[in-house]
Length: 213
Picture 1 (cartoon, rainbow, N blue to C red):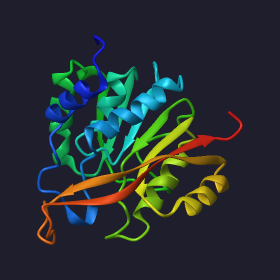
Picture 2 (picture 1 turned 45 degrees about the vertical axis):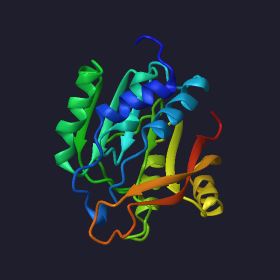
Picture 3 (picture 1 turned 60 degrees about the vertical axis):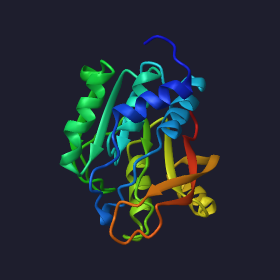
């Protein structure tokens, strides 16, 4: 793809990948901001870990993280989400960027005990999982599943305030973790319990690195 400034690419990505329609509260379906998706992909690219790699996007939503990774050099993206309604939205977004053959959507639950994916030691995992507000521990379930795949690196958008916990969790699975940045995650009013037009929640972007290479 022709080199495009990240700010311009973010606008293109936001237009091509819609917000999750009629989000389901129990799944905590909040659409990843396009600029954050690209910033994560750019971090992996500048680390020399994105080019030509397979990226696994857990809880993919409308696949902003997947497509951002493909746009910046990943060779293949596996987008996993339990909500089958999102598959045509992801595939249409990929088509708009001429990435149809590079994106595969897998409709499946995420579980630390079983799942649709095999170990992928040369992969990168990206994810914006549930924050664990409506179903306690949902965020941990995603992290444990991601680490069970043994990827080179995991990027996760998680609710702020639990860095020490995630550090201990990472160490127990042979990973180290560092905080890349914190931002205000925008949650537009889209469910009946929402009272504000847009609520902004503190969120961390964490990077899990496999220890020993």
